[in-house]
Amino acid sequence: MHFNLTSNYKNISELCDIIRLFHPSAVFSEQGERLELFYSVENGNVKTIIEYRGGQFLGEFPLFSEADKYIKRALKNALYDFFSHLTGEKKEWGSLTGIRPTALAYELLARGVKLEKIPAELIKEFRLSEAKAALVAEIVAAQREYYIKDSPLINLYINIPVCPSRCSYCSFISHEYSRCGAKLLSEYLEYLKKEVVFARELAVKLGKRFRAVYIGGGTPGILSAEQIRFLGEILPEVSEVTFEIGRPDTVTEAKLDALKDIGATRICINPQTLNDNTLKLIGRNHTAVQFFEAFELARKYSFDINTDLIAGLPNENAGTLIDSVSGVAALSPENITVHTLALKAGSRIKEDSGLDSVLYTYDFSAAPVYETLKSAGYIPYYLYRQKYMLNGLENIGYAKPNKQCLYNIDTMEETLGVLACGAGAISKAVFSGGRIERAANFKNIGEYIGRFNEVLDRKRKLMEK
Image 1 (tube, helix red, strand yellow):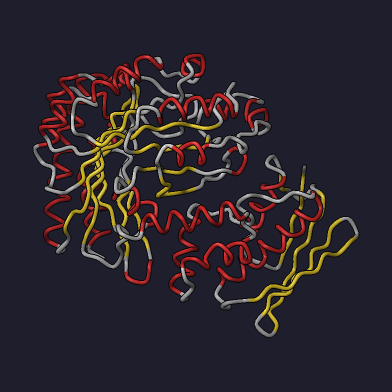
Image 2 (cartoon, rainbow, N blue to C red):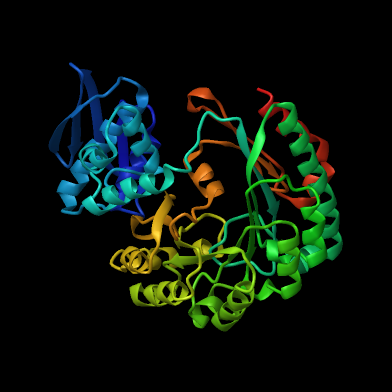
């Protein structure tokens, strides 16, 4: 559908996101069907008028504060209520379009709302379903022992932006190994090591201590055992070091030995699906059998193991998703992360003409992922959402009790800063009051190397603010 949305609220794009909940392919232009939303603040309430097709829809919403974010919430609820009435649909996440629903739960806790009362407040304030409101509260409960803010602690992220091949759903700036080559990767690691040393020295200078290390990508499993040890020489001493191996076909005994030697405590082996036809379709050059073999090999070590799965891959449905979830859960890894496919600009799956509109018709919301993993002994411990996710769903990290990943909690809740090293890595500083600023490294490996002094200077300026 085409809409011409006008409002006396300044940020129209935030309001458009609500309309996309009900019309994912909505287009906004002056030639579209006229939809007007106007508001006023009176006696501690936001009063709204929506005019559409010659009719009016009136609303009134209590205002906790006249800060812009609370006015925006009221207007989003007004549009949500209007389209829900118009279409007869209710969305599981209600009027939420942001990344971190758990942040709203922590906001309620800060207001003095008790944890057991949070689901009811989320339902009232944001129109969440009972199931999603309860899920948010459950995740906050699973985080609370590990949740830290206003602390001198900081995390270290190390990026390996190289993959054996490019997956069709991927929008990250990563380099295929066949194009990158061994020589450039080796040179990249030399500079990466220098940046990590710089980051460690900067942390000491600023009185910061590292809490966790995460080596991600890309596919860090592309590194040789010798290269893994090379990086391990400069890692700080922390209780949690995650190495995201990624593709099962990159796992070898020599690499696992190297990971043990450098102090890795947690590794990620990510099948994404156990359906071989899907794996071939999305451009992953491995099979489900290779995943099982890699997992069995890694189980000989003391690592906590995470596996990633994706809901909504092409040619799959709720049944094939549950087959993958059940198959992975039967192996009893310490962590299982279930992502929902997001149709991102820059990915081949998005650029494939017409495929995105077809995918939006697939319904995975009925797949009992939560119930399957709960019955297998897992608890949900972190959650985030992205725009353009299928069925308006979410990404959830599940863990066995007491196996929550500290880095994931800190990152998803944005409570601690991150010194991020490598091409495409984004450092983050968290200031008192919750203000967050970021500094991004150059995405291209060649530019990262060629402008390395700028990389260090950006990081220093961010962290010394």
